[in-house]
Image (cartoon, rainbow, N blue to C red; front, side, top):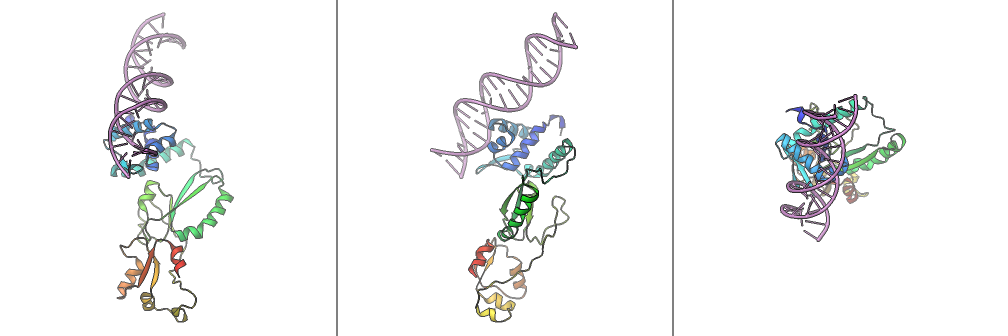
Length: 241
DNA sequence: TAGCTGTGCCCCGGCCATAT
DNA sequence: ATATGGCCGGGGCACAGCTA
């Protein structure tokens, strides 16, 4: 690749397209008209000999090539920005950045008030956009890599710490608990795993397949649970107790 | 039908060669 | 050193075509 043929503005265009996934919005983001962005995309396509973005409902979707390029483009532009800003450290008090956090509804319910207070106190210009995780126990690597989420908070047992594109950190430890109404017959004795499996219950499950950790643990003991309601919402499941 | 992308045409500004 | 004219690339406008 001849770097002389690459206009830095094309990389900004690509970054905006990766972020917005819509040519018109990407154009507005950079203060350009839609045709100018379309033209920039056409030049990128010619330069890289790949469609890069194909039509999708509501806009465009990145091709595998564009997805592979995304981390490098973002990292490169970030380096440029830091170099041009004189390696300015992140300053919460003056930042106007929007942080996107992917998390479950119960994590959002628990953390959002604390986060809001901290932001108001230390980073009044910062905005936080919460979005739901698409799957429980599965690190949304693609979202993090593409910049669709800055942080993901959840339980990710299979996350690979060796992956250079993501950084893992334990922020809290939680236990699975069973919640039942007052006076429930099972509340009068110590709950066994057999009691739990046999009792009709609701559980937080994002997708019917593959089964989650609880089902795997039960299957290892020759048990299968009596699941009556699967919901991706912790608060809904709690409300059914 | 609305919203989206792509294209053709025109204009503007920057670059370069040349004249003064 | 400065002015001038031609060329070229990029952006805007208008509009056609596509798609959900």
